[in-house]
Picture 1 (tube, rainbow, N blue to C red):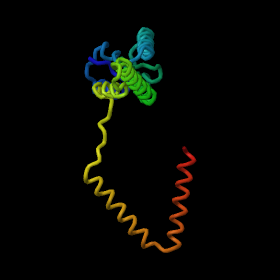
Picture 2: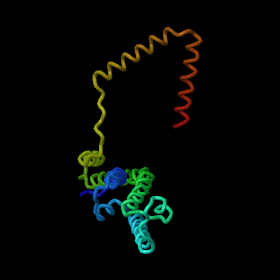
Picture 3: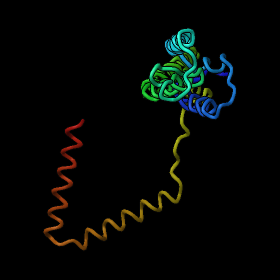
Picture 4: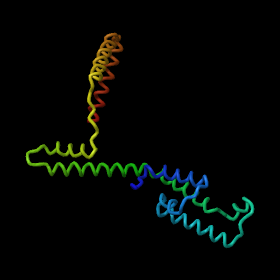
Length: 190
């Protein structure tokens, strides 16, 4: 089974939590499979505390007595840990996604450079690198402009010219000022 990454973890934790809340039997191995070492230690610690409570106190008869002494069943402890694990997983998603993206970019760079430097003398090395990326599934398919796209652009340009010809002198002056400001912004960012 492939290793879970951070994008799948919260969903799997939620599924397992729902199973626990329904009261379905879940093995200890399955419970700990989605938790990290810190969470497993915390789970074992809380279960140990409940064991010591069971040795000191008799089983409470009412919910108020249970709350007063901190009595919980194993299921309640597991549910509590899973809820905390879900919150932590959701908090770590952004960092995890950035890490996955960096790994993907590193892998793509390695593939490109390997092909680039292994290209034969006289061959186009950049092309060899791009071909290797495409074979590995990294290059996006190039967006091709269809005939319809070109027709739409021509129509848009014709409409723009028609609308500009119908503008008053003051509106034309304002349009010219807007275009100058846009040119200034573009030049400034370069």
